[in-house]
Image (cartoon, rainbow, N blue to C red; front, side, top):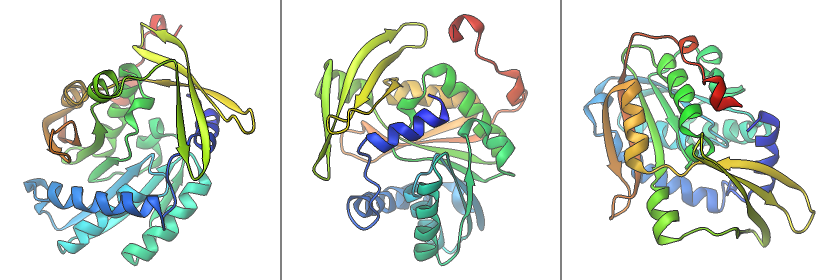
Length: 270
């Protein structure tokens, strides 16, 4: 999805970003999740530079930094997102919760290695990975690997979509989303076998505005194994009893290639 389409998508899709309402509840859950994650030996160092990638209003990044501060660590937070309006909220939220303004970067996640001068942890929070098929996810992870250099880690919050959407709650040709009294419809259009992604159209019945988007249904195992291609060790921290949602942690980026070495083949791009 192009940056301008992504902005339009989030203007239609009812993702909770009210930091005093449903977003505040998400923040509380994130604090709980990260208090377990930071018990990993990786977090024994004294200071951390955290990059909240595609961070939106900063719920994940602020929560992780809050937990690290509770553990006596020095933290610096950078939030990168395409949407300037979301970044403005992230700046205010971080200042209120952490007592320190974050660095705000408006830009494309695939250019993170060019836009951010290093981080100890790159975080992807908020079930963001369905936006990326395996080809694009490989490019994204390679950029993340470059950002954290030789001794960093990535954290990816994810829910097993194969289990949830393929078994527990199978999705049909049309399904609605409801939020704050408004409704949005997601309509099936086509399946792309080369990418493994489903093309859908999100429509506002109230305004008639629509935007196409692709969704890839990751399971936890497949996403973890792709992280393992780019990082030497992988850990998983379940956040619900059946372990079908959790935080994937990749530790120690693998050396040997650069971001420019990895390009999606033309046959897949066509």
